[in-house]
Amino acid sequence: QATHFAQVFQIARSAKLVGERVALEHVPFGLVLGEDGKKFKTRSGETVKLRALLEEALTRARSDIVARLQQEGRQESEAFVEQVARSVGIGAVKYADLAMNRQSNYRFSFDKMLSLSGNTAPYMMYAYARIRGIQRRAGQAVDVQNAPLLLHTAAELNLARQLLLLPQVIMEVERDLLPSKLCEYIFATAGKFNQFYEQCSVLGAETEGLKASRLAMCDVTASVLGLSLRLLGIDVLERL
Image 1: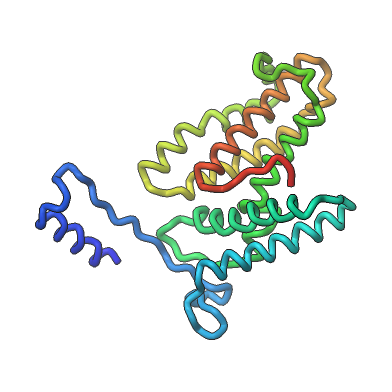
Image 2: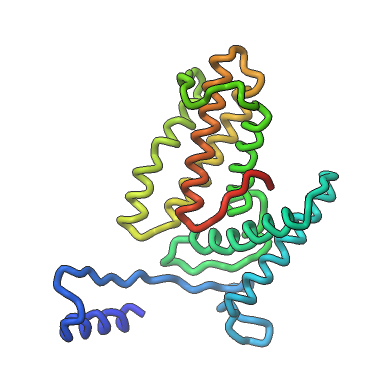
C-alpha cells in the first residue's frame, strides 16, 4: 500500500493535479483477521462483505437484547428492540474497528465486540444510558446547570480531571490520525465514572448541595461520552 500511494501522490503532483500546499498523506491500516488468526474470510473462503457483516451484527445484537429483556422481566415495544439492536449492532462493528491501533492487525470477534464489558461500544452506550437513568430518577428538582461543584473525594477529583482531557485528546486524534486514542479516552472515562458512582452516593448524598454537584458531574460525563461516541459515528441512546 505504501509504495502504491507514494507513486499516486507523486504522479498527482507531477501532473499538477494538486498544489504544493496540499498535503497528501497515506493512512495505512492493518489486516482484519478471523478468530483463528488468519485473514478474515467466509467459511467458503470468500471475502466478507460489509452488508453481510452488519446484518450478522444486527441479528446477534437483537438476540442479545431480547434475552436481556426476558432476564430482567421487561416489556418493550418491537420498535424499541429494533432501534437498540441497530444502534448497538452497527455501533459495535464501528467501535471494534476504530478502537484498534489502525497500523496493527486485529482479530474480528462478534462475541467480544457485542460484550457489555470491556472496551466495547455496548459497554460505552450502557454507561451513557445508565447516567441518563440516574438523572431521570433525580427528576427536575435539581438545577445541575448552575450547581457549584463540590469535589471532596479522590473519585470526584479523578473524574473531573478526566473530563477536562477531552479537548487535548481530540487534538491528538487529529494530529496522529488515530481514532483509537479517543476510544481509549472513552473507556477510561467510563471507568472513572463507575468508580465515582460506586464511592459517591448521588441520589442519596448527605446535602442538597452535594447532590446537585454530583448530578452535575453525571450530566457533564454523559455529555462527554455522548459527544465522543458521536464523533466516532456511534449513536447514543437514552435507554437500553
